[in-house]
Amino acid sequence: MTSAREIAAAVTARERSAREVIDEHLARIDEHDGELHAFNVVIADEARAAAEALDARIAAGEPVGPLAGVPVALKDNLCTRGIPTTCSSRILEGWRPPYDATVVNRLRAAGAIAVGKTNLDEFAMGSSTENSAFGPTRNPRDTTRVPGGSSGGSAAAVAAGFAPLALGSDTGGSIRQPAALCGVVGMKPTYGAVSRYGLIAFASSLDQIGPFAADVTDAALLLEAMWGHDRMDSTSISDDLVPISADLERGVRGLRIGIVEELTDVEGIAADVRAAVERAAGALEAAGAKVERVSVPATVHGLDAYYLIAPAEASSNLARYDGVRYGLRCDDEDVQHMNARTRGEGFGAEVKRRIMLGTYALSAGYYDAYYGQAQRVRTLIIRDFARAYERFDVLLSPTSPTVAFELGAKTADPLAMYLSDVCTIPTNLAGHCAISVPFGVDSELGLPIGVQVLGRELADALIFRVARAIELSVSGA
Ligand code: GLN
Image (cartoon, rainbow, N blue to C red; front, side):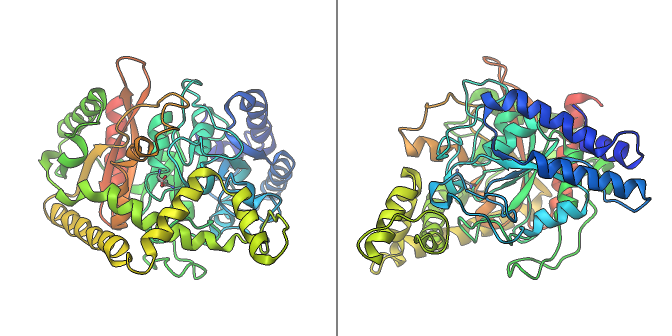
């Protein structure tokens, strides 16, 4: 597979045309996506037209961006003007956004070419992509298994070579966990670092858009193309871009790295996954870092707090799907019945479960006991992380407790599914950044394992550097 940076260099130097690159990727999608179902929709005509327009600009000697001609897959909860955007939900059936998400505009400006919209768990609620109303995505490394979720389609698209780059969204782990399960790199930037304008909201205090790529260097390029303030997103931070690519090879000599005990040395983390974290820590030590264990006590309550805060915010965000403003409408005798029927038929079981959980947690009399308490726990998690970061530059843990599981293995047990995100959720609650980097395979099945590097807010460049050192220790490159 050719990397994004190689494609961009070749296209810019006119060694290859963008059209040729796009055709090659579309052919691969055509051949294999019937089996994998990474995409909800492939936009072949638009992609070819964009590639030709780019080739014309290059021929005319116009400057093009750092991602010139690079195919990119977009999670189907990112608004694309005139192109169906479904969140893998029936309730958005037929809806075509009147505008592009800021990230879509920025990638276009960087020269990237969107090839399609990828499958996800409905409204990004899930960890396996099995909650999609359009059927699951399969893991390219083993098609009897899930790709993780909720950005399973994006992770699978990169792993299958359908596009060297993809975008996902991460509310509780939805970029990092599928990246780990598919053997690719996935990263959740600091909250507010990448504009969420045009990302369909799930839980607004947690949602963040981030990159997928086959390696750390490409993921850095993609993040750099998206980073930065956007006045269309009120939570967007104004800090300038820290150089990520430029610092990538600086190594880890002298860095203090802490292995988070509560996310690593606990029941439920597979032995091979734990061993991979140990080996990654060993590799970092060999590269000059100082590694120790650290306790971040309140992270053990992360999952509990998340499953009150995220559903509470979701129940509010999803109130807008009323049969009037977007997509599906199921008519009935009066407005109230029309609303109820539309929502009853339009939402799947997991989305309904979240709306009910959230509505209950926010209801009068319970608000302080559930939502208020969860917010206090969130504060404790932030405080405990802050203490750990007084002594450590970055932290280390598994990304997912296990390797990819079989399709159907957890669909009957929501709690088992929720536990997939136990290592990733604390980062979202704190608004911090974290990256998953592939590190070896499990001994039984040979399936990829992801190691997670966590950083405080705006330590994005630093976690990339550490991830690159981990990657180097695998490839020896
Ligand atoms: N799996 C978690 C959930 O179902 C996280 C999803 C996400 O990050 N979008 O809520």
